[in-house]
Image (cartoon, helix red, strand yellow):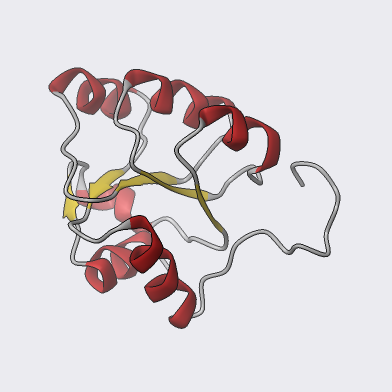
Length: 122
């Protein structure tokens, strides 16, 4: 599924240009601790998080993430939006809680890292 479909499914608000929403999403990862993202997230995943600070953008760049969804109605500050724009990183927000957002996306066919796959970052 592409990020536009994810946006529609979760009723997200987008802070990115429309062309960035055409990226294909194969995997999703949810965390608030960026150390967990660096350690366990697959490169190229979509990140779902409640942490709204500049470090999220930095970690997303390191992990080559395809986008970020901020949950629980949290709104990114203008400096976060600008940093994401500079990096062509799509950012979205949803009113949904993290647990619900993950469950809804899972029910629509999006999965997380295979727990049987013990290889690190692809």
